[in-house]
Length: 67
Image (cartoon, rainbow, N blue to C red; front, side, top):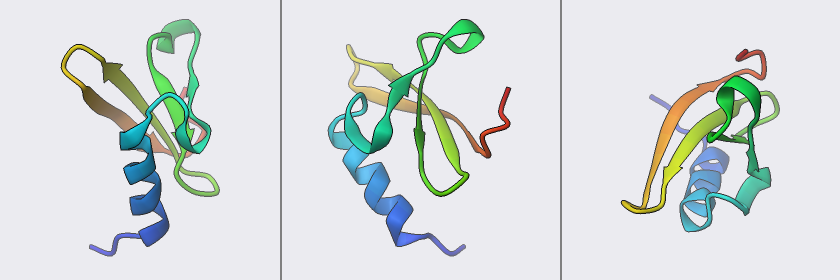
């Protein structure tokens, strides 16, 4: 499987600061307590953060039409 280097770099940045890097923002409504960021022109990742365990869980990676 081919892995885009730009996405790999963005994931590394996200690992350093999941609330501030690569345009990360909190979600609202039925997705509250989750975060989202852009990995590519139309590739969006939704994830949750467990601060106590220092874990980022990727919920989904899709186009913006997730809801």
